[in-house]
Image (cartoon, rainbow over all chains, first blue to last red; front, side, top):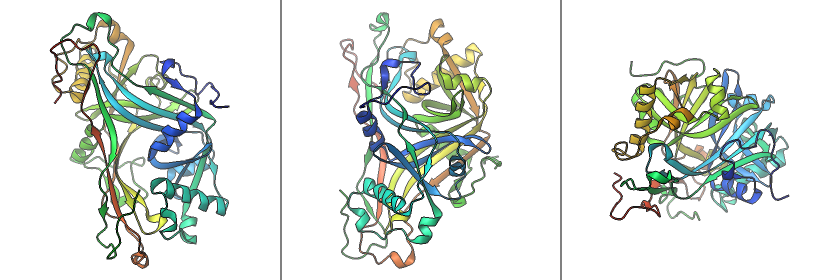
Amino acid sequence: MSEYAVTPRTKLKRAPKRGVYDKAQVHAMIDEAYFCHVATIGKNGPIVQPTTHWRQEEEIFIHGSNRNGLFQSLIAGEECCITVTHLDGLVMARSAMHHSANYRSVMVYGKVRVVDDEDEKMDSLKWLVEKIAPGRWDEVRGPNKKEMKATMVLALKLEEVSAKVRTGNPIDDEEDYDIPVWAGVVPMEVVKHDPIDDDRLINGVTCNLR
Amino acid sequence: MSEYAVTPRTKLKRAPKRGVYDKAQVHAMIDEAYFCHVATIGKNGPIVQPTTHWRQEEEIFIHGSNRNGLFQSLIAGEECCITVTHLDGLVMARSAMHHSANYRSVMVYGKVRVVDDEDEKMDSLKWLVEKIAPGRWDEVRGPNKKEMKATMVLALKLEEVSAKVRTGNPIDDEEDYDIPVWAGVVPMEVVKHDPIDDDRLINGVTCNLR
């Protein structure tokens, strides 16, 4: 199966033409992002927090402190929704209400699995570091027992998944195309700037990030 | 009052030093972002969607189709949580678990108000367009009756608000500072690229976005 099956939660009611269920496309959207937003029902109602994520095969992973309130709700078995969003451009139309955005977003629903096997947990944290800086895991000090104990790793299966993508120019009403105003797209992108050395860098060590 | 009052929902349990309740700082974080994530309890459980937002005084505004499922839950009176997130940098430490991110994030809790007064609704939509492109409201065709009817504008009061900010270098364990690995920050930024003209631009019209 190269596509995610549509479920009541993932069926797009609006703009179905923007819907994407292709696994490879969804994976690419998830992998390109450095953080996602995780929503659940916390003890004081709905809550959504940003957090780093990574993916291995058909699971999306997040990690955090054992004491994180949202994580506590997740491991108690609450349903959750994880959303990954890329804003690719501002879409400027000839009428106010046809302004839009070019974007890619993924929504994943389900209940998390606690990664409690020590080997799997360690391996999983390795993939987070390797996602951010390939090769770095072997260069830094690995997690010690205390750190491992203080940290939770959670996995959410990519099973109930939908994505939406908008690209291209504004779509104006036919009669508005002669309004003499500029229209088009302002592309947006998340960029990395040159790395800044830490104040306490050891002499001779240089940045080797790829 | 220049600060938001701390409530049970907005009291930071972890890393309280990162907490920000200053109104001016929170406003700046909200205004700089083009989209937020809105979470609530939908008819199939927790759901979080990205959407454009704007701010006027002490309210954050969102808009969408009348048929949007999440919006339906919001107007039915469900609690919601709106989060605005900026990723400012990847923080590269000498140990795996001290890697971090420089970020600014705001969380707002409460129940929305439906903006149903026609004048207020129109005025509010104007501020969205003016946020994205100052001066544009007077250049484009304004919303017609049909468009106004199909669109919902919702406001959430900035009352229960917390923000978190992390800046600066990695904080490593003292004994790890002699590990000969590069450490520091990779700054990240959302940038706008040069505008791309629509295919059907009228001859002589040029881009005047500021």
